[in-house]
Amino acid sequence: GAVVSQHPSRVICKSGTSVKIECRSLDFQATTMFWYRQFPKQSLMLMATSNEGSKATYEQGVEKDKFLINHASLTLSTLTVTSAHPEDSSFYICSARAGGREQYFGPGTRLTVT
Amino acid sequence: AQSVAQPEDQVNVAEGNPLTVKCTYSVSGNPYLFWYVQYPNRGLQFLLKYITGDNLVKGSYGFEAEFNKSQTSFHLKKPSALVSDSALYFCAVRVSGGSYIPTFGRGTSLIVHP
Image 1: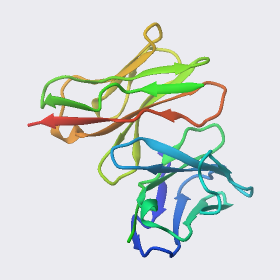
Image 2 (image 1 turned 120 degrees about the horizontal axis):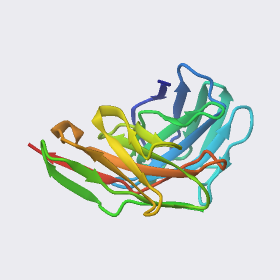
Image 3 (image 1 turned 45 degrees about the vertical axis):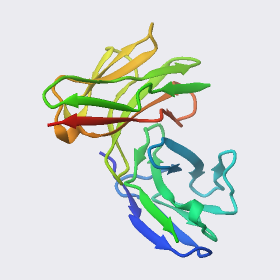
Image 4 (image 1 turned 120 degrees about the vertical axis):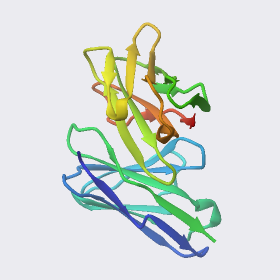
């Protein structure tokens, strides 16, 4: 099956700093990638959808200037949390899709902002 | 519009007993239905999906789900639960021919007791 990786799997950063999370499709070209946020014991909340080479589409209520998404190639998308605060601490999951195929999910990144 | 309901926050079952995790959905059109499993601090793993055809869908790890159009349900089942099945289970739906972005239920925690 299709494999999606995320790096890092876990990151701790200080309040006010920025942190970048990478999402890679390892064995297929992902025309579309998705970024989700998951709070403890809650469902996935779609943050944004990104298509290779174009600007990401953010869901309502998600600050685009805070959560910068770049989909620079067909195998890589990055999410940068800028000026992170403790309330940004969460589990971030990406997924990738190629053409008409279903989404394949990455293993997630645990962000802790101290 | 599309929505998913998982009415149970938690399901407890003894090892060796059959298990059922409930899911009902609402879509404007024909549904595509999915089940995913999430282990602690991990991303989502695909279990099975219903697109069309046989209402009983068989998936990974011995799980199956039955699509019931009249009851708008897609309950996940397994004849004999294992302790290792303990995890968080998500049902998801999207409408055929529409956006490829599914809507997730809030998740059901399955606990299998030895």
